[in-house]
Image (cartoon, rainbow, N blue to C red; front, side):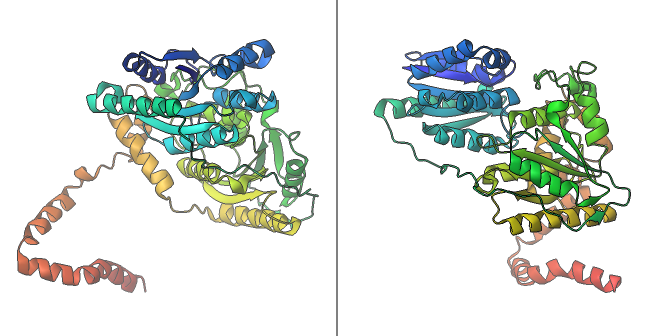
Length: 459
C-alpha cells in the first residue's frame, strides 16, 4: 500500500513529527511510505508549476494521504497552509478526491484539536475519506504504551483503506455569502488619543472586505489607520528554529521588516482590528505567516490591555473552529475581544449595526481599560505551558521562564501550604460518619458564607 506523507514541518526531515512516521514505517513494513516536504519546499512549489504538479501526481497514484505536521500557533505552519491554498488555486482537487486520509501531529497538546479540526474540514472539502487522527505529545515515542497506541492508529488507518471503509463527513460544504456590501456612514466615536489600527492581509482579495473596512475606518475620529500585511517586507515564514526561545531574538532580526512592524505599529496601537477573507477553512496564509512570525516573543503576551476585533469576508459563521482559534488567540495574548463581524452575518443593516457596536465597544472599553476575565481558552493553555516551561522546555524557552517567574505564573497548587494543611485535616475529619453527615448538610451554606461577609463589608 502506498502512503503519501505530506510533511508539514518547515524543518523538513529534521522534524520530531517525522520520527513518529518513521516508527510507523518500522512497525508496518509491508507498506510504502513516500515523503514529500511540502512545507519546507513551499517557495519552489509556488514558483515552479511543474514541481507542484509532480507532487500532485504522486498523490494521485497513492492509496492514501497522511497529513503529518507539528502544531504552529493553533494550526499548521503558514508554509503548509500555503500548500493547501495552492491545491485549490491550481484546480488540483481531483487528485485527492476519494483518497483515504489521516492526520498525525506532535505538540504539547496546546490547541491540537483546532489543528485537527482544520485538516479534517480541508479533507472533507477535497472529498477525501477522512478516517482517523493522532495527536502525539512530543515525547510519547519514548513510552511503550504510546508506541503501541501509535501502532494501533496506523493499523486502523490501513485497515480502513483495505476494506474501503466509508468515512463520516464532519463538515458541510461552505456557502459563500451572496450579499454585496456598500459603504455606509456610521456614527463617529472620538478616540481621545487612542490609536486605532486596522491590519488586513490585502485589500484586493474582496471588495466586500475593502468596503467594510472603509466604513469602519471612518467611524473613528480621527479616522483609523489601515495597513496591509502584503506591503510589509517579510522574507518568509517561521522556520521553527527556536532561536527566539533564548532571548526573544528572531533569526530574521535585521533581515526584514516584520519585527519592527509588529513591535512598533501593531503593538503600538490601543485598538486593533484584524481583517481578512476566508481561504479554505481559515484566513489566508499571509495571515498565518503573521501569527507564526509573532512567535519571536515566545509565550509572552503581546497585546496586554488592547481591544481587538475581527472583520472577515466569507462564510465565517459556518466555521466555528476558526472562531475558537481567534478567541483563544486574543485571550492568550491578554487582549480583550470586542467581537466578530462578517459579510455573511445577514443584511446590510445587520452588518452596519455590528460594525457600529464594535466601534462603540472598542472606544468604551479602551477608555476604561476593560479586559474580560479569562476563560478556559487562556487559563487551560497557560497551565500547559507553565508546566512545560518549568520542566523540560526551560532550556529552550529561557525567555519564557524569566517572564513566567517574574509575573507569578508558577502558581502550582502544591505550594499553597495553608490549604494543604486545611484540606488534609478536613479529609481526615470527614472520615468520621457524624462529621461527614454534618459536612454534607452544611456544604452549600458554608460555600456562600465568605461571599456574604464580603458583601456586607462592601455595603
